[in-house]
Figure 1 (spheres, helix red, strand yellow):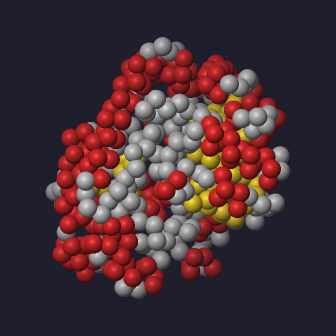
Figure 2: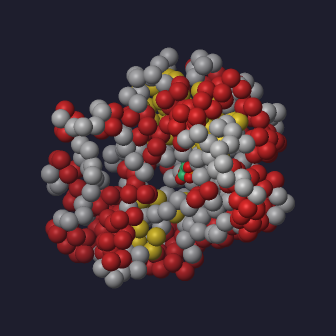
Figure 3: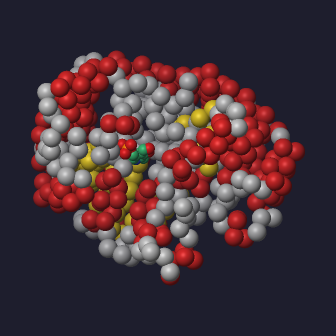
Length: 441
Ligand SMILES: Cc1ncc(COP(=O)(O)O)c(C=O)c1O
C-alpha cells in the first residue's frame, strides 16, 4: 500500500504518516521476485549487506550465550560489558576517552537516526544531511515536519562534503548536521584535513547545542591504506557529536540488529535509554555478547581483512568494467561496498532523458531518467541496482547515477557488467520497455 498526499484529508493515518519516505533497497525485493518468478536469474547489486557469513567465533559466542540463558530482559541502555567494549574500541580509534555511560545500544545503526531527529528537533528545525545519502535521513526529517536541508555531494569533489557547501546552508535554524563517512551510496571517504574544514564551519556557524550526527557504520570498510577519520576526534567536536556505528557492515551481521551511539554526555545518553524503554525495552543480550566478542576478539581482524580484500578486488573489477562502457563513468572510491557510476551518457544515448520528458507530469514526479534505466536493467536485462532518487529526492533532478552494491560474488558481478553493457546499447529494447509502460516508476 502506498499513501499519497491526496488521501491524507480522509485517511485513517496521521498527516505525518503520509510524509514518511522509505529505503528502496528493501522495497525492490518484490520486483526482483517478480522477475525471478518469470524464470530469470537476477544479478543482485541492490543489497547493502556483506555477502559473507557471520564469522564463526561470533556465531559460537551467541550460541553459548543462549545456552547460558542470556535470553531475558536486560539493561535498556545496552549491557555493560558491551558498552565498555564500545567505549574502549571507539575511543582508541578516535583518540578520545569515552565512558560506557555515554553509550546506548540500539537495534542496529538505523534507529538512532530517527530517535535523534525526534529528540533534538522540533517541527520547522532544519536538518542538514548529505544528498545523495542514506534515505532515512531525509525520510525521517519530513516525517517529523522538520525542514530538510540537503547538502549536495558533487562528483567533481569525489563525493566528499565540501566545507564551503556546508557553510552556505548552516543557519540559526539548523538543529542537526548529519555526516556519513565512509558514505552510502557514493563510497566517498573524508580525510582529516577535509573534516577539519567541516568542523571549522560548524564551530563558527552552529551554536553548541546543534548536534552533529556522525554515521560511521562503514568505518571498517576501507581500502588502499585509507584510515578511518571521525569528526569527533577534532578539538571541540566530541562535545557536540553523536558517533554512530554497529556490527551490520563490519562483521557481516545485518541480522544481529546491534548498533550503538556514543553521546556527548551521560545525561544525554540517559534520554535515549528512556526512549529505548519506551520503544523496545532492550536488545537481545545474547547478540550483545556476540557483538562484544566481535569488537574484542583477536579472531575478528583476519576475518575482516579477508572481507576487505574481497571488496577491494571486486571494486577494481567493477569500476574498470563500468568505465569501459560507453556513456558510463565511475570513481574508484576508497570505502564501502558501493560504487556510484554516472550514467548520464547512457540515459542520453538509449533515450531515457527524452522518454522521461515525454511522460505525463504525475508520473514524472515519481520517476527520473536513471530510474527508468534502473527499471529497464532489472526487468529486461536482469540486474538489480538502485537509482539516484533512492538516496534523497530533494534537488536530485538532473542527476543521473546508479548505486551498485559489490557485496555480491565476483562471477555474478562480471555477469552483471556484461548485462549492463548490453543494456547500455539496447536503444530499441528501451523504447519497447517504455512503450509497454508497465514498470516506469
Ligand atoms: C549510512 C547507513 N547508516 C545506517 C545504516 C543502518 O545500519 P543497520 O543495518 O545497522 O541498522 C545503513 C545501512 O545500510 C547505512 O548505509
